[in-house]
Amino acid sequence: MLEVLEPATEAVLREIPRADEDDVDAAVERARDAFPAWRDLAPGDRARMLRRLATAVEDHHEELAVLEARNAGKPIRDARGEMEMVAQVFHYYAGAPERLLGDTIPVSGGQAWTVREPLGVVGLIVPWNFPLTIAAWKLGPALAAGNTVVLKPAELTPLTALRFAELALEAGLPSGVLNVVAGPGSTCGARLVSHSDVAKIAFTGSTEVGRSIAAGAAATIKRVTLELGGKSPNLVFADADLEAAAAAAPGAVFGNAGQDCCARSRILVQASALDEFMSHLEAAVSAVRVGDPLDEANEMGPLISAAQRASVASYVDGEGGGAPVAFRGSAPSGSGFWFAPTVLCPVDPGARAAREEIFGPVAAVIPFDDEEEAIRLANDTIYGLSGSIWSGDGGRALRVARALDAGVLSINSNTSVRVATPFGGFKQSGYGRELGPHALDAYSEVKSIFYATS
Ligand code: NAD
View 1 (cartoon, rainbow, N blue to C red):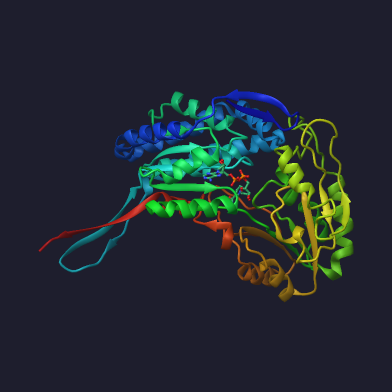
View 2: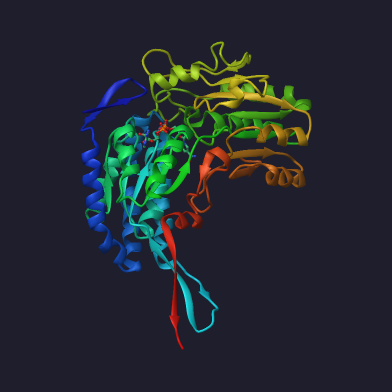
């Protein structure tokens, strides 16, 4: 059995059967059997089915939000927002089946055109930080393009995926189109990667596991998209609205207790503005309310597990490359995997805390002198997922945005994810794009057809 814990209490929330490789094989077979009928469904009918999935999530919004909040330890307000996004994703991709357009291409001797074909059975492997949300980013375009899927949630957070699969069946999704296997990555995930009947793996998780998935997928030339780790910069220039930048910074790095691939965990501040920025930041950090995920007043919950807390602590308790703690917020004591929001300053760009993805509520503040140094420091990382630029000079903000090696940037804001815009990384943050119109490319093949007319 798989014991699913509640991170805020450390108590067992539920016990569920632990899937193994045979369960994966059976799920792939069901998905393969369901594929021809799902692929051949009229586009308008597939669109209607996706709308029904969106409605099912809306109808069970609070139930799903509470389940996610308890299992992932995230504040209920965040969980509600995430469930709204899940519904939005299905609404958005309900528009896709009837708009998967091709090209007509001028050639001699006939007509040439392109169509988009689904891939077949797609394996979706997702992490524990935004369990159903990240699954939906993959499910929406995969199903819209006519694929059937096997979804493997993280062992720590399988509950909303399992519940969603039940709701999807009740909503009328044909049996076998969506299959969930809740089991370990080393067995179930690895089996999906090696399975010869799986055409593609869409993976979100750590860069380390992503690397092994890309290597494993090579054996069958499986298509792969990878959304991996990050160490994103939040660049604050002296000409920015420093109060606004400091007020927004905690949400950008302590949101989801810092367990966010887009966390702006390196705050790069122009040295001439450092003191003023830090005094605003200290006030903002001490105001962050950390506690019971189900209390509506709270903005941050616990970490996901004891192991995660030990790993995060290693960056603060003397091993952070010597980075001094500038100030910390508060956190409950007692049971639960709690960790107070922590700001390190000044952090040497070569320090561990400045280079590694901590995946917890720890921000490294790094001073810089000018625009050239800001860009150099921001790009001095193996990652390239997201980032923010705070400046009152629009020309500078746009120049810097073009110079940063990252897939998702925001100016005078810390937003990373919108359903309608593409999301994904440069460098070792992965490849492929989710969300927006671009995601559909990753779930379909372009076919070129020529019809001889003479
Ligand atoms: P993880 O890589 O340990 O696990 C992710 C998923 O992969 C889980 O379902 C796990 O069971 C599975 N898995 C583990 N080993 C496997 C294997 N050998 N073969 C196949 N599947 C395997 O990541 P995590 O700890 O769950 O999540 C945290 C990581 O995810 C962080 O690095 C974070 O940055 C990243 N992340 C990235 C994004 C993004 O969009 N770029 C979003 C969220 C999280």
